[in-house]
Length: 188
Image (cartoon, rainbow, N blue to C red):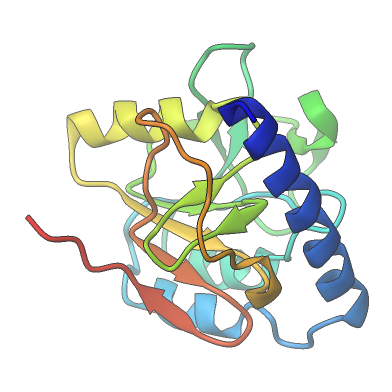
């Protein structure tokens, strides 16, 4: 089985786990994320506007917006890194690519903390996304400029023991679920 076939199989299984977790509903699912972000008040943050069965970071993003800039990703095109447009609670949104909404008025920011959506994660900081490489390219570019914290936000059910990863897959620094905060410790 090729790497792409292994990734496709891992995504299929993870989407099923995520859908089941989403259907259960998790009141206060963003509570731990709010606690983490409270330690970064005033630091530019990027969140995301959830689509399909993604866990909802909006309550934590709203709290963060009261203390600093919060952006959401904007896709400029295939093969390009993301840019981030400033988001505020109740701002006017328009349809963007891939079903994600974006602010109607674009005001670009450069985040230092990114809340990253995902399909599956491992406790070692591995992340399986949708396959477009947008966050991998973006994190690589941001990390080349300055320290950038990547926080995977997911349902606990999206955890996998091992993920089919490749060298270009950017690692997460932390994972936050509705149940816990997982700090990733890397050896130097």
